[in-house]
Length: 368
Image 1 (cartoon, rainbow, N blue to C red):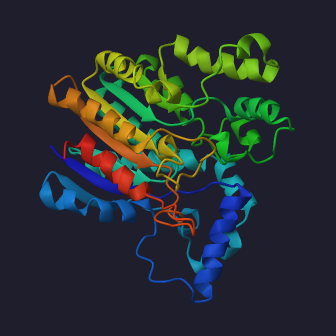
Image 2: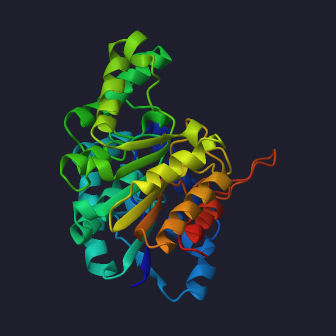
Image 3: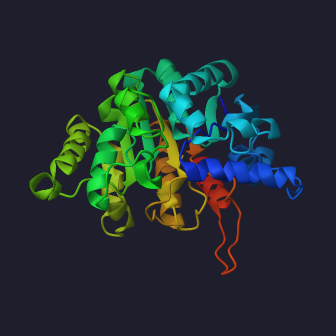
């Protein structure tokens, strides 16, 4: 049994700045300024950065891309210009479009990847739900653990998150959330129950795809401060109660501060890994887990993530448990990358290394 590496390039945020970036891309391409465009999405970048892995290991095989409508990809086609409006993407999100594509990922994994295991490179984190649904069908909900590396806990309803954010920022709840909102969908979409990158874990837990006790979320920067429930307003208290309610039901968290503490991290993370009692463990890396620490091409980069070497150490510690036979690596993904920013270098010398770091994380998970 090996691994099949595939791409899933859904990129449907309705935030105006994200839509305008796509419009600018199309305008520059139409004017003839676009150079030969080898890298259409994160899969293309990662396939290039991981070429040595495919060459050295016969059990890691490129498996192509999930079919995505061009207007929903990071780099649309020229004929898509008329659809490059926030309202068009908002309509897609409100109508459950992310759920449709997550189900397409589930079918792709079941039909094109199995009996091998999936490695996915993509954009919208909601698609991880599709891979986990396929694997839950294979292992059973009792047999699968998900280890998610993310600066945000993607299970808090977006209206709850946005209401709390409005208090922190001292402004009314925005019609479109800031980049730290954890998703591009509008708050009314969340209230109607739309499945998005900001709340997909809630759906997986509620529907029994994952058990609460089999979910680990590491690197979070939005874990409620202990004083929130005592001194915060109603919006902050609602956010904290929702968040901590998941913890009471068994979800395990490791905060960014704990990960970056050299004394705390080894003990806490090893204790979490000790608690993995399932046959398989799936690892999901949201690029914002390392934002501003070499990773500058994360779609949501409102907070500073953990350092590159600590990300590698996390992968190595998981791999050590696989090699000891505690559980098998049921697959992994590398998500929430913005291909427009990957590899750029600022005049001041800051260089994006998102592809390199994500590839390094993948190599360590695979034991290379």
